[in-house]
Image (tube, rainbow, N blue to C red; front, side, top):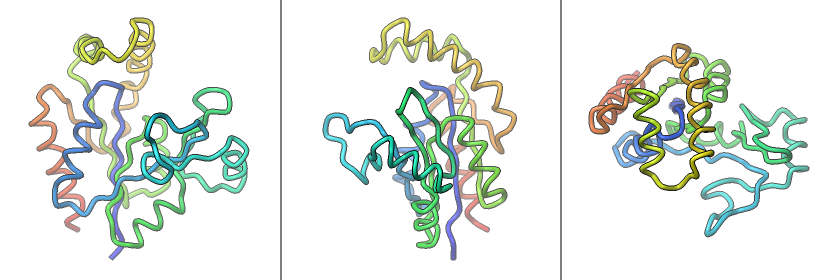
Length: 188
């Protein structure tokens, strides 16, 4: 039996990665969709584990050949995208594929797969709570946080285009809601 697709999108700091990591530890037959990127590996990142690394030229060739479900040029020659062949391989193995993508990518993947995909938007309780979470992380400079908050306000405007919106005001509740939604979706 072919696997299904579960798309997660959220503004930075909403808790999306934490929720996905929780779900990957549950008995849901999930496989994480590894994105492709044209940026260089950072630290201990390995090809085929954190990302599929390729040159900007290779990435552009794959774009021309329509090999991506979705992609974005985040900065000049710094691309990120989801390879169709990778998703189809996992689905053919009967795995349920989990995507961690930006809102536009999430909407595009949902359009491509229709009812085979469940799109979930993780929403922070408010922009102020998001600001506090990003500040508490201690990983970004104040100007970067402001940039992320501006982007978050834009991303929040897309929430209604997702199948399910989960407000993450309590992590444990949000994890339970996501788990229940995926169990319901993959049951039939």
